[in-house]
Amino acid sequence: MMKNETILEIVGKIADRISEEKLFLTELDNAIADGDHGINMSRGFEAVKEKLSGADIAVPADLFKLVGMTLVSTVGGAAGPLYGTAFMNMAKALKDRTELSLEDFLKALEGAVEGVKMRGKSTTGEKTMLDAMVPSLEAMKAAFAEGKDTKAVLEAGVNAAREGVEYTKTIAATKGRASYIGERSIGHQDPGATSYTMMLEEVKKAVV
Ligand code: ADP
Ligand code: MG
Image (cartoon, rainbow, N blue to C red):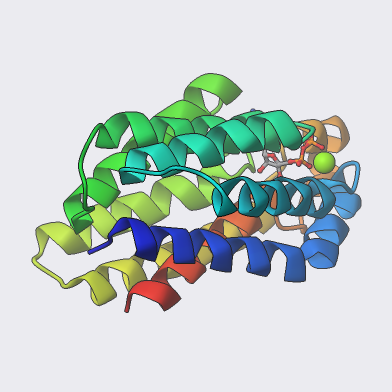
């Protein structure tokens, strides 16, 4: 499914997308919290782009590790350590595999979800990125088990992530800064669930 060059390209696309959406993500965060999600994420992915340009990367795991470490050290707020852990856990799951199959990718995402849950002491239904991550992974695993091809699997994942974002509008935040306003967060979509969905959309666009 993906070699190093493809993954590098996708990370570049993700960085561009996040910087294009900087204002939008920040507005979403502003409505329910402190309005820095877009700024945080674009700063992080700009740094990722810089780091990757001169890096010595042998296997995909090296790449994910570098992305994770860069996000942890450059993104302020909750999202940095959470996304950073997600990418570092993807690296751990992949070990020294030289190429990613669809199955490897799903295993890596499982690691990412576990990492966010552990680091964030969070689960689904709390209006966070997990409300996009978890259902999209479940949908992709189900599509994969049914023997669907990569394109169909990623499509199922993106659709479920978008539904997850819609779901976050219906619930109150109980984790993260948005939990400070509790019930008043209802009606607003979660910024982290939104940024995750954007990333998955870029993977889908690049791979199919
Ligand atoms: P901060 O909340 O520190 O300002 P950001 O604005 O960059 O950081 O990120 C906010 C996003 O982080 C939220 O929209 C939510 O998706 C995610 N988030 C916050 N806390 C948690 C948590 N405990 N578990 C999972 N995701 C979380
Ligand atoms: Mg914020």
